[in-house]
Length: 356
Image (tube, rainbow, N blue to C red; front, top):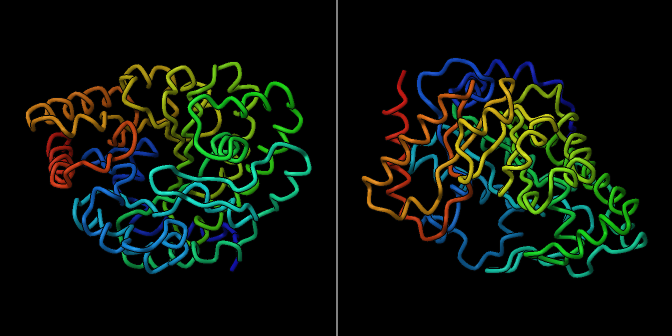
């Protein structure tokens, strides 16, 4: 297996590369606004819970047949315009030598957090054979999906670093910020290594055939713009610029990032994901005309009566018309308690209401 991107031109000729999703990402005319949902493959689906029964998250991510089945489930059920690879952001760092587990109800837990230069030595470079299961899963999916594009994804250096430094999820990111401010050389060394790992992980996915990639910086909203530009942006830019010649759109998303949208766009994204707190027309003014936007229905709206859901979907579509390209999505992931039938109705509504 190789991570060469020489096949990019061939991929651009495939039907998925001219899908409404990819065209919207490229700010090209579309027949309707494309829609997919972050965490669309997951706990809201009974078929997902059935196939995952008794199987740990990491094990599920390492089984290509299971990855393919879980990734396909929401495409079959909802008719979304794109699939997203079923995986987890810590998969590549686990493959790169970090002892971790994904605990139900908690998230990634790191056995030995990284807090010194010696600790950093445990995080080795990632090689394609380390994640051969991802390559195999993507190739299976591209064959199954046909004209439906597949989105690859990875965690951004800051969010991965936060897990590795804190030892797990954190509300304050106190240890993370302590390293940023007090040990900036160690911080940048850690993020630079994570950027290399993330870039290699995404290159494997692109070489295997994904039509787009999304870089998740879930916890970047904990930072000021000044700190983001100093401690985070260079490393996210390293990842995104490393894919500049890959021939696939690059999406960048974080939560609580209203103050960071301009900087996140500058990191090299073609599409900036926007959470539910910022209207898409306002976000468009911040990220500029060179970038499409993705979002941004509040996931909790899906628990409201259908007339409320319909009104809010139409509002998001109206605000998205201010952008040169709009991919409809939630402002964060699908919540586990969401009724699948509501998601299906949202897809139908988006297609109907946005038909050109």
